[in-house]
Amino acid sequence: SGEASDIAAYSSFHGGLTTPEGQSYSADTAPIFIAHGGADSSVSLDDVATLADELETAGTDYEVGIYSGAPHAFSVFGSDAYHESADQRSWATFNDWLEEVL
Image (cartoon, rainbow, N blue to C red):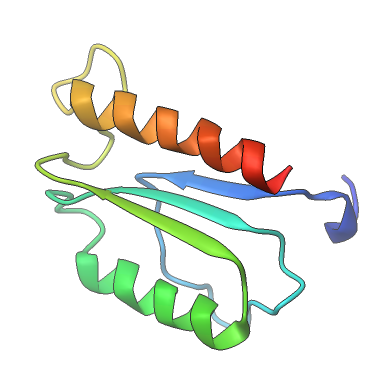
């Protein structure tokens, strides 16, 4: 695997957002894009806010998109959780974000 300096950006679509014990962020952490469903019952909005606070305090470049009505796994095609508008909007925003940070 490559060194951290080889990483240009990170992304999370409906991922777990708690920071593992003993890990942290710094100002030189690559930019992070986070897409989260507003109706996610697996990962709370409190977790989103806590992570944003950690990233802000560390000086890490980040963007968070919260998509109204979208449950956990909102971008998984064919699943009961699939939420078309959240999937399409988050993907479009992610691609715009990538153009800016890469």
